[in-house]
Length: 128
Image (tube, rainbow, N blue to C red; front, top):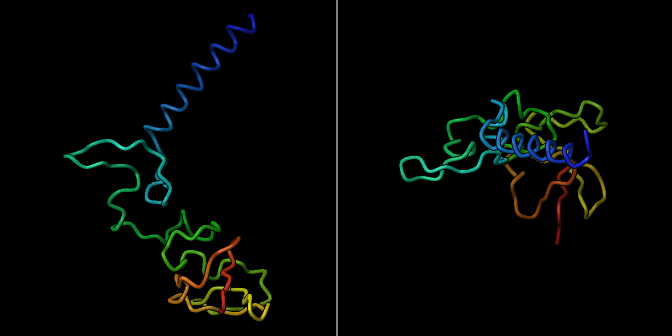
């Protein structure tokens, strides 16, 4: 088989694979805050694998302890790192205080505060 034909077949396969991925997703990727499907119009509304997700829990087997905050306050990542020397309770996140340069436990309800951000599964507290 010559190289040009191999390249042509690869492109056809690649195009088929892209089309398959855009039309099919695995169950665990539905409502995971990442849009895998191209939007389509259903009854006048743009719909994807991420629409109407308010009925899907953000803390589920597919999102639990995956190092991504799928819940607004990161409840799906609380208590996941068992190697931590800072033992936070089940309703707290491990955080680094930039002001004091030390680890602290932050209540989940405060995790979406605008003075905090997430870097590699740690929340960082910004102080004035």
